[in-house]
Image (cartoon, rainbow, N blue to C red):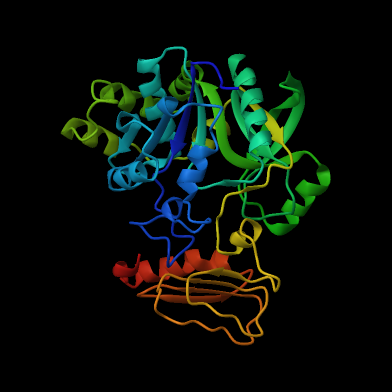
Length: 365
């Protein structure tokens, strides 16, 4: 059943995403890659809202060079629903911009803030959590969805749970005590053992009026800029004065700028949702089907011989790729780059990208 007419989805889709390099690059970030059974993560994120929030109440915040590509992937979202960032200025600025746009459209609006690059296996549980979050947001809370950890990850942020707030859509919500970003492995193990911590999913729900009040208190500089942008919000984000004011915003995340400081944060715990933020090539082993030997093959001319537990990607349809005697590896082939690393090391791709940038290999970024 669809949520009431005042509930809107805001999909953040402006990231440059290089964690799946060399396939994911500035001009073709991971939310646009069609490696998920021929669909992109952006398409999957939008289709996941079917039956919950209609297309006309889905807003997308992105940069201009990506907007046209996203519109081609999902033609049902009205072009007017795309809010353009002249330059990336962090998720706090994205939230403030979208909240201000929605407040002009509907003063009673509730925002369901989602990302364009997450994978969620159980849509039914996702819908239940969103409904619970909307009920909690109606009581004036800033709501975050917390994912039950399945292993002690040092790559995710964590939320410590406080006292229960109440039951919403048959889910018990809790106060958030604190946020901790990407602890080391030992601390992550302690978090898991305590049973008091959840992964920070980066999905949020709140009334626009509530979050704008919090932004005014906690990030007054952004509030001032958003005030200057009001004449052009949702109308002309290419106006010179809009670009000038927007560029003056100091980049900041919504987690650090708002959620870690607010006293209104409530957490909806989510279990068995099959959530993954697809933050590395290794993460694809959790979301894509493998063959009988544990191999994941993404390409037309890939033939494995005596190889196991290996991911191979190739976008060159005419090139024959034959891994022989390979185990626990990741091989990514594109027309201008080849990346090979052991499984478990693909988080280091960020270091690789930093190396390319430092050494002026800009054509490959």
